[in-house]
Length: 359
Image (cartoon, rainbow, N blue to C red; front, top):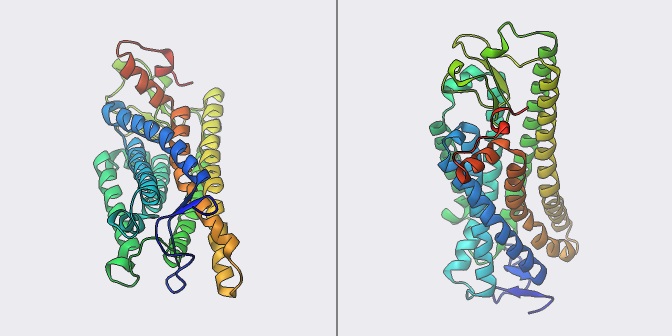
């Protein structure tokens, strides 16, 4: 082992023609992998089990979250594969080739799903009746599966058609194209979240000056986390709205946002916090990857010494693994709906006021 790293192949340095780097892990990277795996796997499994078992969470928004959880677990599976490739597998065996063929794909698919989830939030806010009628759990599952298969096939095309030989290691040429796609997806995600926030703020300001024409007793107030402030069960239908909207229990009545100052302030805070958490996580976690890969691409085009940038690549790759722990952890902390579902599972007969009155 040299410089605290272990190589999984007998190749030294770069394969210049195909820009293939060997799979390595430093001691620090190994520790990061083990910490993220030990924390991330239980967190993601807990969220997945709670969403799958609790009928209250069977809605489009949480179905998107279930897809994100599956992709997080796939990212962690890739981390386990990398540990096996470096510390256990022999050079050029099936484990290393499998890792090389799948690397980068789960996180790229995850960005697509995050973009779709943001668009779903936008539709739920701007067209709540259409969303309730047409956007179902089954549709969300089908769309996620279709996107996953399409993106996986697209990123695997160079190997499938023999444009790039499959070798044990990281193909930098393919990685640069993957990072370009990710940068576009992240930009779209940020733009979509800003749009959702602006639309939410617009409706909230309209609600401050336009009182709802129906009594409060006939309203269902639902936040983006799916938590609801409901009147007595006898006055409500079985199904309620998701995302940031307020639904009239009469089928053909328009949707309103309740205008009480306390409610408006709470919804405004939640919308702002959603934007901040979503945008900051994308910027902080993914920005270093974009900067390093862009700088490496420019350096290679200019023919300069890129050894320092190449050494940074192995560290910025950990961003996807860190994000697969950070995202679900924030979901557990922020979602009162999830906390309520966990309490229901642990104490089926207990009822707390927070489960009914979100505000």
